[in-house]
Image (cartoon, rainbow, N blue to C red; front, side, top):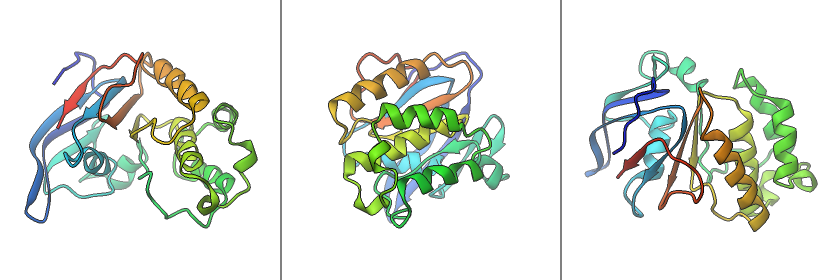
Length: 209
């Protein structure tokens, strides 16, 4: 596991999580600095589960999580405002129009940027789909909505599971450019989960599961 001397955005200490009797990770500790980092592992290794735990959607059996010193177990709501995470398989927003979901983000994320959202909608060619309910969108278009939300939310920590899955070639190029810019950000962190590192994107930390 690589480390970075810069003050971390995320600190994970002694993390343990298990499904029934299957332990996915135990005593897992790492720091995530500003820039782009990745959780790597094979299928079933717990990559998506780890993002869900870091995002506050699943409770660990042990360990602490802190973003800029705000601990999930002590300041749950404040912590959740510091991190963007959405399960790309979720059906929770299916009844909403894509635009309705994106517009709702400003209520949850204090640094949400509407101008950035508009640029992302254009970059991912989402304009024709904004009025459609989420359940009508293709897997690729749904993922573009989640990615637009992720980059517009403005959170100190952004979690993205399999960022390039189901995307068309123009969207893959656009996302790679976004991640290349993110890699140079001095204060915000992006943590990806995937089988391999994204081509052409400098990584600050690799967490191997």
